[in-house]
Length: 182
Image 1 (tube, rainbow, N blue to C red):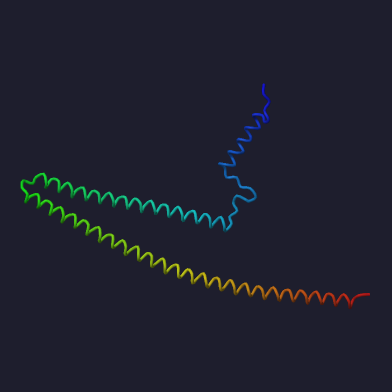
Image 2 (cartoon, rainbow, N blue to C red; image 1 turned 45 degrees about the vertical axis):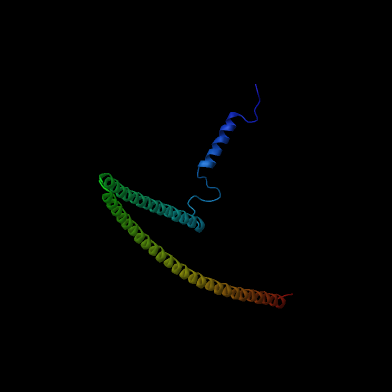
């Protein structure tokens, strides 16, 4: 019989530990109810990403629906064109079918072009809004930066005053020690 480095009991405990560490929510060095600002920010960021993912899925579904709708419209036009061509009895009838199909296709293209221009204008408006928002955000960040710098300087002054006061107190204690000495 072969000798093994670890017994089956030790192997089972090790496997259980690996499972818990990989799949469990073990918290080491913190209380489970402890929330700090970094974890809150991370959760908020995750939630925003999930919202964006949901929005992307909805946008994709809308685009897909539009594409399928366009295919249906083109298919209907082609079916009409096909039935017109099949029912044509002369060269003039065939020419009439082509002209009708051409007009319908041009109308469809004009409609799509108008819709694309509308969407382009909406994108441009959103871009301008985002630029304005970013500019406002930059102004606010600069104001906050200036306030932080002002507070930092005030703290430096207070620390210097505190240091001077401590040195004064130390000097006074030294003088008292000399006056009350033997």
